Image 1 (tube, helix red, strand yellow):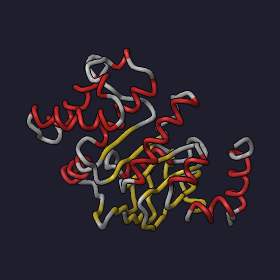
Image 2 (cartoon, rainbow, N blue to C red):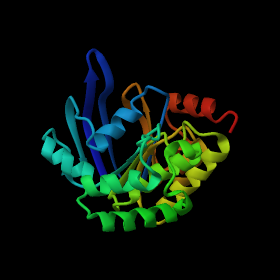
Image 3 (tube, rainbow, N blue to C red):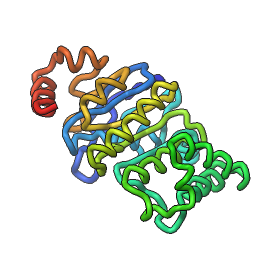
Image 4 (cartoon, one colour):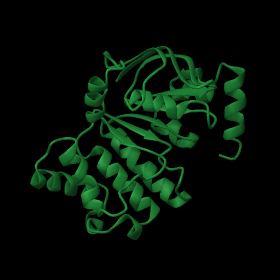
Length: 243
């Protein structure tokens, strides 16, 4: 996966969520770390074509993510998303939560959608829960359904925004293991996380975002082992103190 961001800016009124962010890399798994409110979620939304930059340029795999809605819609269809909250339809079963977007967004016939959904549920150990509503599932199971939905159509890039923030430690470990398995299988991933040990283990490239800018980026062994910037050193010393 090639990514190039040049002076990427996103403003909301007077707030600069991204402030001339510049980043260029090639990686299979890019992990975004940094303080809350620093711009990680905004950058992820731009990478997924869910939002548009106010100024600057962003290209992924040599595709320029410009402001044309039809172009962005096509980009969104080719990728998968999982956010902090599970975002499952509460009135639909786990199976239907997956088949619905396969039919409506990706144009699958119902029978093909059901087959793809069951394969995806089975991959995450959820086949026995296919007919359950989200309220009948644990938090970890709901997040696994979200992951199953995100990969059911074979996304080019999987974008994950703090996928374990609403989970307890046991469920967090369960979901992180599944994400690590996807990465090991070759899935291209961009994710944000506060789990530094996981970031170090799964990433090919780590970028620290703060105040809408890239403070530092590089291979995990370099960024975690010998960070160059004083602000990076202070951030890592704080978040890894009890790791």
